[in-house]
Figure 1: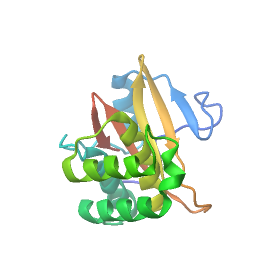
Figure 2: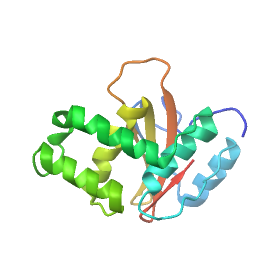
Figure 3: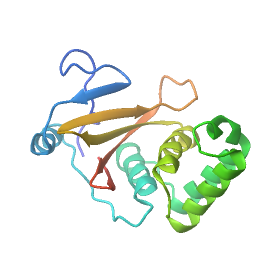
Figure 4: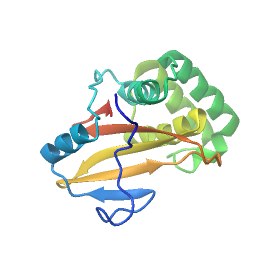
Length: 170
């Protein structure tokens, strides 16, 4: 892979802004754009853990950091047990319900959208990485940036693509 260029425009080039941007590319233009910056979509098998696997693959490809899915699952549970209060407000129940739902997801890959949103934030905090999620919203490509709680000017960035209920690495 060539120079590490994150797939995100800030400033006026596309009207985006740091943290959250919207690119007005249809999917075909997105693929051409990725090719132009020496990036490609790495398809991840939709086995219920594609979110975790796509983040870990991006971390490995772009930054040479290799962590197994099982190790990340253990990190997530350990982090959540220590900091459940921080994430409980984003969940439908109390922190015990959140712990149960995340534990259920990590064991079975059976989850709801509410858990996915929380998982993105937990993973960003566990791995100390920014996660940029590219997704489609009414023929626009939206870029959502998940920022970890840690303050570090040297944070690594991982890009993932959410399309057709699947998550892929970029």
